[in-house]
Each structure stands twice: as structure tokens, then as C-alpha cells.
Length: 88
Length: 181
Image 1 (cartoon, each protein chain N blue to C red):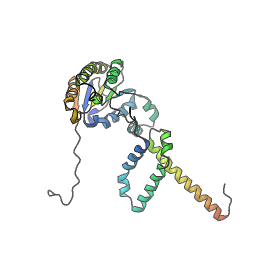
Image 2: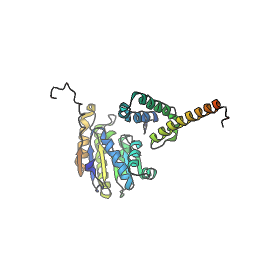
Image 3: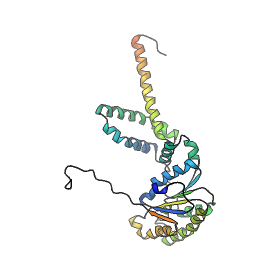
Image 4: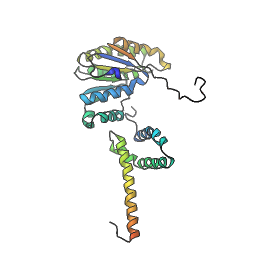
């Protein structure tokens, strides 16, 4: 019967492609940052597929935010260690 | 799209276009779902809910409610398409038939059989269009099955309104080296 919906990876690629012009207009350093954001969202494609959200871009944005927050938590822990404060 | 302004009237409208005017049909489905229930019969496995959801979201925050108003059925053979249309009750809900002829172009089905089945579908489409707007999209057959182009002609001939859409040529970006520039 075939697929009735594009796979989450196809959808992700399409969404990324939709921002191609935006990316092109950015400075090189910002382009790399944007690529990092999409790379972080790509790590959660299986979860996004499982979520089966009608608007997958929202899931991709949340995935980016998730990775950002993990990074913030990690940096916060390191900062606490440098200050000699217990982190919790 | 401008010509398909809502509300549609109770008539059988046939759109013939490359890719069966899928983008236009999905946009139309989304806009109809904002206002009420509709039925979609997908003959070419082309109904992609993601663009529909994006369009609905542009107009309304009630995404789930609007999506729930779409009743979708997919036909994977021309026999299924014919049976679905035959069994469909005439209700005051718009019906969109996307890429109806996709399965009728199937080379494993004899051309006479495809013609017979399509001839059986047309009265049902007309019956359904008495109660609600019916919009049917179709694409021209692939070059290898060019003899089936008459199916699209038959469908267009039975419609109250028939539109043939053509893809616009991709504009070429002007360069300094254009001879006409």
C-alpha cells in the first residue's frame, strides 16, 4: 500500500530546505550556529516520529530547545564546580 | 486558488493539472475544514496532512478540531475508488476527490475495464454533487499510457465546470550576460 505520510526524516529535510534562503542570508558564523541547531533537532527524530504531531516543526523546535537546555544545565554544573559550590 | 473562492456551489468541478493539483486541493481541504466537515477521497495516495495542518494553523488555533472535521478515505485500486463512490451517501458535506484517475491509469487494468469503471463513477459523482460541492482533481496520464488520456476527457466532459491548470515556467534569473539585457 505504501506510505500515507512522508517519514519524519523526509519532513525534517523539507523543513530544513524551507529555511535555505534564510540560512543563505545569514553570516557564516550564524549559518554554522543554525546548522548546529538543526543537527541537534536531528538527534531527536525518532522521538519526533513517535510524537506524530500534526505540525512536526514544533517538535523540531522543541528538540532544539531541549538540546540548548541540556547545554545550559551542563554549563551550570561546570560553573558550580569551578565556584566550589555543590550543584543539585 | 483565487478562482476557487469559498463557498463552493453544489456542482461537480474537475481540475486537471500536473500532479493532480495536489497543493491546491490540500489548501482547499484546509480552508473547508476551518468552516465545517468535509470528505476527502484520495485516489493517488497524495493526501499529506502536514501541509493541511500548517495551512489550518495559519488561520486558526483550533488545529485538532479542524483536522477532525476531515473524513479521509484512500482508494488503492480503481475498483476500490468505484466502490467507495458508489457506497458514499449524498450528504451536505463537500467532497474532494484527489487524483481520482491515478488508479484508472494502472496498466494492469484493461483500458475497457477502466472506462467501464469510470463510467460507473461519474453518475455517483453527479449524484453527490446534488447535495454538496464535489471537486475532483486528476492528472494527465504518463506518456507510456497516453491512450488513457480519454479517461480525463470523459471526466471533464461530465463536469459542470472543468479547469485545466498548467505549471508556470520557472522564471530564469536575469544575469549580466543575458543577450537581451
